[in-house]
Length: 333
Image 1 (cartoon, rainbow, N blue to C red):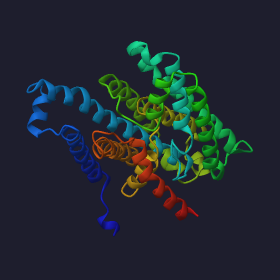
Image 2: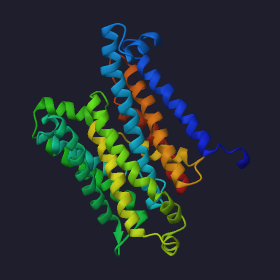
Image 3: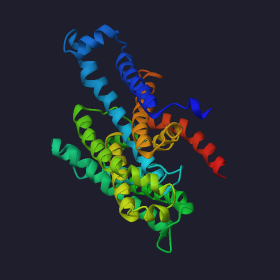
């Protein structure tokens, strides 16, 4: 069967085609179905002004943001799994997303989201600080004798997630009822507030994350053989760990700052990509593309299944991811 294994290049091409199809479909369907010809005219700035508004100001930014958020979360998950050599590692399960949500809420309460373009661009940095705090807490809880105990990692992540939830509830009590209601829906995972500015901001952070992680792919390949073997091969293990943690946290935090907490994308997609990836470079790139496809499809379903009502996209990914997580846990038992 290995002779018929799909090559990474072929998988990348297939994902690119799927992503283009998913993006196109997201522009066509919704509470107001649109004809393909009308959508293409709207993209070029022609046709009915109402259709142009729906396509260019609502659906296109949302579809592009979904692709970027999904790609960032899946890439962060692939990096954490490679770094920790734990296929159950994920920004959501390790508390990174919860910490990022706390940072985002603090930034919002301080007025960053209302401080113009500069403030909105700084919001992911507030989320990043929250994510780093969560990473430090998880590391402290999972450390034994100065080394990270991978067996205690998930348990520590669960504890930090619970702590993050408590902090979020405490912070929400400081805001108005309207602010609390809006933030709770956002926290469950939503792309309803997508804007071209958010797409531009997340594009920058996603590019920084990719630029930080792709050069580490060779080190991840060596780490798969064990830390001692990687060290003998010339890998600066601790430096790689710190760089990968920072890049993965930046990606997850930037995604959370614009979409809320969307779980399990960083868990499921790398597992699927690993079926065809032969190196961590391929794994990282395929994870990014696969995450983009998954979340565009999930968000399209979230806003159309019960139209005109909208389902939280985080709820859909959890419905898919939670059973898969249980299956993976049983396989590792």
